Length: 276
Image 1 (cartoon, helix red, strand yellow):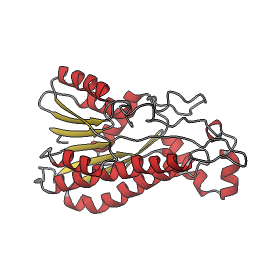
Image 2 (cartoon, helix red, strand yellow):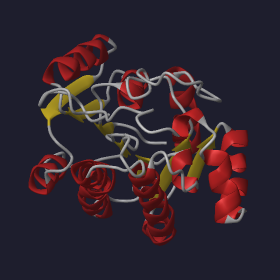
Image 3 (cartoon, one colour):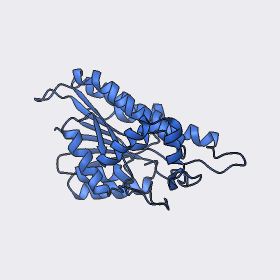
Image 4 (cartoon, helix red, strand yellow):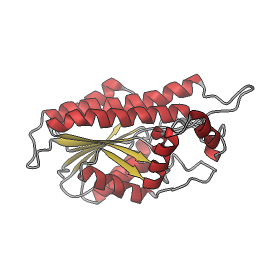
């Protein structure tokens, strides 16, 4: 696949960082976005050392105007990876676990609006490009999650936001494929990144970042509309979602990740912290 010009959000840490380093090669231009300027500069320095032209943009994906200005100014794009995202769980309460209103709004603004703010201008850029010899104008990949396949009571807004990303990418991808733009949704399980670093419970199927990056790049190159790993966790999640709600919830509530406060909200430490 053509990969001369690549844009990555959430490039300052986690999967976004891993993709940037894996794709850094002579002759390639990497447009790297994130909220942590220090980390972005570190990633860019390493990409440049590998021969790539790395250009950073300290950018919050929730800023629609800023995202549009950045992406439209790239000129051409072969690959776009929407990796920015946050996670969090319910908190304890006198009557029942719940999510604070502000947390829910941040979750959707980052995970859903952030993807839309990345994908829509990227589509405009790619639709103005000529098709390659393979008929493809460009490829766009967004990070969903296995959590988007279930209704997990421990992380309600995270599950809902990732479900929205997956459905949007898969459904829109059916139309955009006719225009020569391949769209992929990544439904991954736990990946060893800063997002999961503070989880104190056992994370089944924990995938190392390098393995996740290889699976994503392989799936994108093959034009897969949905890239799921570990496969057994994705399959199990789909099965659980077919069960009656009461039975599924009784199982979820017994899981460590289903307990209030099990997943601290990411991306809140300071204004310069990346949402990735």
